[in-house]
Image 1 (cartoon, rainbow, N blue to C red):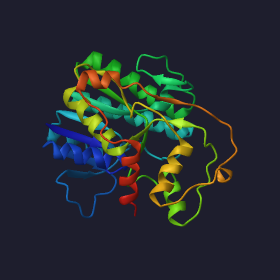
Image 2 (cartoon, one colour):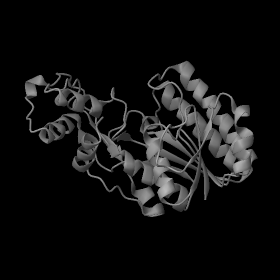
Image 3 (cartoon, rainbow, N blue to C red):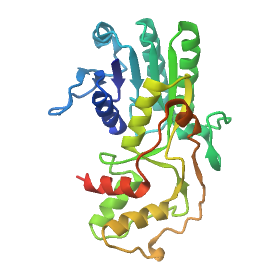
Length: 291
C-alpha cells in the first residue's frame, strides 16, 4: 500500500514510518527537514502544511492509497492561536487528500479529548475537552468524519494516550526522571499520586498501522496500554534500573490524584492488536536507547 505520512520525523512518527516499512508498504513522508542518514527506505518531501502548493503535486503523483496525519506545529505550545492554526491546516490536508481520492485516512488524536474522567475511557463516552489543544483535535476529527461521509473515504482516529520511549523530548516526564537518575539525583516529582496510561511508542506505532490495515470500521480507536500506572511507580521502576531506591520525602507533596486508562476493547476486537510491552520492559528499552 502506498502511504503518505505527515509528522513522520517526530517522536511517534519515526516509529510509525519504521513499522510501515517493516510491513512492506511504500511510504512518502512530508517533513520540514530530511533525515541526513537513515537506514529507512521511505521517500521524503521537504515542506510543511502551511504551504501546501509547494508539495501537493508531488503527493498527488504518488497516488497515496492511505495517509497518516501526525504533524502538529509548535509543541509544546498548546495555546489557542497555535491550536487553531493546526486545526485549519489539518482541515486543509484532509480536503486535499479527499480530492486526490485517498481511500483511507488516519489521524492522531489525544486522550486529552476526553477531558476530566476517572477510570476506563471508551470511545463512545461524551468528550469534555478542557483545553485549546483538545478542542482543536476534536475540530479536525469532526471535520474529517463529515468529509468522509460526503466524499466516501474511510476515516480513522487513533486516540493516543501517554506515549513514551527512546527519542521522546527530554522535557517530558520519563526522560526527565531518567536524566536526573543518570546524574545520581532523585527526580523532582510534583504529582506522585497521578496515574496515567503509559503506552510504549513501538506499541503505539503498531496500533496505528493495524488500524490502517485491519480496521473493519472507521471511527475512533483508543491507543493505550489498557491500564494505569502511578507516576511514583514509574520513578521507582526507573530508579531500580540504576540500582537506586527513592526516598518518599524527595517526592512532591501535591495531593492531585487522578486515574484513567484506555479501554482497548474496540481496537482488540476490530484489528486483533494488543500491546507487547509492559511498563517495565518499555522503560528498560527507553533507558537502553538513551542518548
